[in-house]
Image (cartoon, rainbow, N blue to C red; front, top):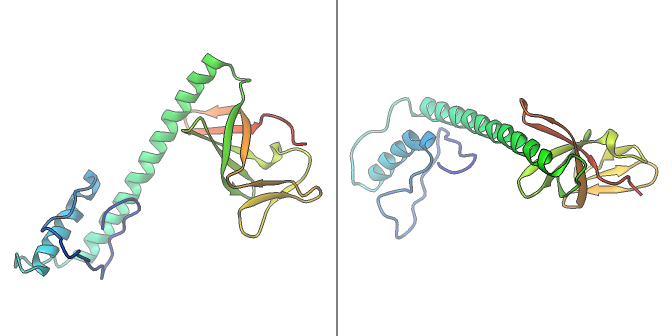
Amino acid sequence: MSGPGAHCAKGSTLTVGIRAVLSIPQTEPIRRYPDVVCHRALLRELGASDEPLPEDLPEQAEHASVRERSAAQIEYLADELCLAWLLEKRLFERGWEEPFGGEIVGLIPSGLFVRFEDVFEGFVPARRLTGDYFELNALGTALVGRRGGRRYRLGDPLDVRVQEIRRAEGQVELAPAAPAP
């Protein structure tokens, strides 16, 4: 019931290892109440408690899952906003024309996502990929040129330049550092 993307659901079961202690590791604060409920259920199943489970457990489980996902979205946006400000500061120090070595980490029909400097990510719109019209392949693993067949695949290295930073949105637009061959 804990960890990234955890989801509480009606009918969830507890799995306990052979050498289990009557405790489950604690998680982030948003998970504390679900953890307490989980601990109580575990103790009950092990015969160490006769405390009944809440009658509205399915509703509580759904509420906890919704709130956790909402908190995760806010945390992600906060990270993106901070990184946009940090990237802009770095560009003022290094110069806006400085290329960055990056790696393609995501693809959608309208472009690709590149991670660079180990922490920053940005989007390269397909319109900035010159020399061809690029389409996402059937597996979603590459943007492929219609005429020339050039491919931009997940995991490929790609040198990029920052074109625009929208700090208030936490978004970074990139372009390839060198024109396509």
